[in-house]
Image (tube, rainbow, N blue to C red; front, side, top):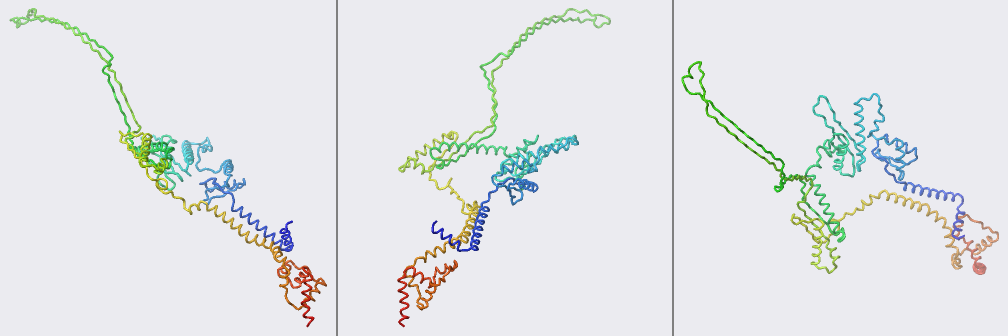
Length: 550
C-alpha cells in the first residue's frame, strides 16, 4: 500500500470516533448540496402545451396531468399550461381523451346535444348560426400567427311585408402576433364570405383585439391602382430574378446588385373587327316579278236637243269614242352574300410600356477575374459584356424606350452599402441569461463547497504526514545545536531516570504532533542516543566534567 494512503489511514485513526463522525457528516452534506444544486439548476425545460385557456380549463388540465404523473407548470398569466420537454404529445393525447380543453368556439357538435322533440324553427336557426360561427372561428385560429378569433354572423331574413331583403353580414375579432394584420384581415374576409351563403367580402368587418379596424367596406385590393401596383411588383421581381440567375454563376451573388423599374399598363381592352371580302360573293336569293295589264274603255254620248228638257221623254244615246291599252312588266332581283369576318378580342392582361434597369458590379471582383494588371479598357469591355447579358435576360427593347445602365464600382463593407448591425453584447447575453445564471450559480456552489469543505478536510488528512516528513530526518549537528544547556546533573539524572523506569507513555495524537513539531529535551536526548551512543556519551562527559572539577 502506498505510504501516502497509509499516512491518511493512520491520521484517520488518530482523529477518533467523534471527529470521524463529524467529517462523515460534512462529506454527506457536501455531496447532498452538490446533488440538490445540480438537480435544481439543471431541471428539464418546459414546453408550452396550451395558451389562452380559461381558468376552469387550467384547473381541469392540472388535475388530469397530476393524476397521470406528468410534470406541468402554469404560466404567469394564468392562461397557459407548460409541460416538461418531450411529454407534450403524451399530454395532448391524454387531454384529448378526456375532452380537454373545452373550447368556447363550439361547432357542429352543438347538434349532438339538441333533442329532436320540442325544437322550434327559431331554435334550429340560432343553433345553425352558432355552429357556423364556431367552425369559422376554429378555421381562422388554425392560420399561422392567429392566437384567437371570435366571429359574429347576421344571416339574411325574409319578411312578408318587407320589400328589400336584408343582406347577410359578419364581424370578426382576431388576436395575432408576428404577422401582417392587414394582409391577414383580407384573407379572413374572403374566408368568411366563402363560408356564409350570400355573403360578400365587402360585408365582412375585421378588427384586432386592441379595437383597431383592419378591414371594412369595399375590398381595396380589387381597385385598379392596387392591381397595377401588384403587377408592377411581380414583373420587377421576375426581371430581377432573371438578372440574378444570369450573373450569379459569373460574378457571385454578393458582387452585384440590380434594380428594376417598370411602367405597366393594366387597362382592360375589347376590340371588335369586321372584315368584308368584295372579291368573294355567293348568290343568296333571286326574285322575279312579271306584270301583264290590259284595259278597254268605251264611252256613250247623248246629243244636245229639246228632248232632253221635255218630261217623261227618254233621250236617245249614241256611241261615243272607244280606247284599248295593254302593259307588260318584268322585274328580276338577285341578292348576293359578301364574305365577311368578325373578330372580337378581350384583353385583361398587361403590357410593359417602359423598363429601366440599373446594375452595379463590384470592381474588385472584375479585377480578380481579369488579373492584377487589368487596364480600365479591359474592365470597360467586361462591363459591356455584362450589359449584353442583362439585356438578353430582361428582354430589352430599345424601340420601347428601355434603359439599361451597368456600372463597375467599389463596394463598401456591408450588404447593399449598409453596415451589418451585429447584435450588441447585452442583447447576446440577454438570449442566454437563464443559462448563464444557472451555470454561474452551479460553479459558485461547487467552489464554495470545495473551498470550505473539501479543502480543510484534505488539509487535515495530510497535515500529519507533511509534519512527519518535515521533521523526521534532522542531522546530528542540527539536533546538537538545538539542545539547551541546562544543569548537567539534572539533565543526566532525568535522562537516566527516564531510561531506567521507562516512564514514557504514548501521548495523545495532538500532543504527539506537537512534540514532533517541537520535541522536549528528554526526547531529543533519547534521539541522540539512538543516532550515536559514543558521541552522546562524549557530550555528557563534557557536561559532567566542569561539575567534577568544580
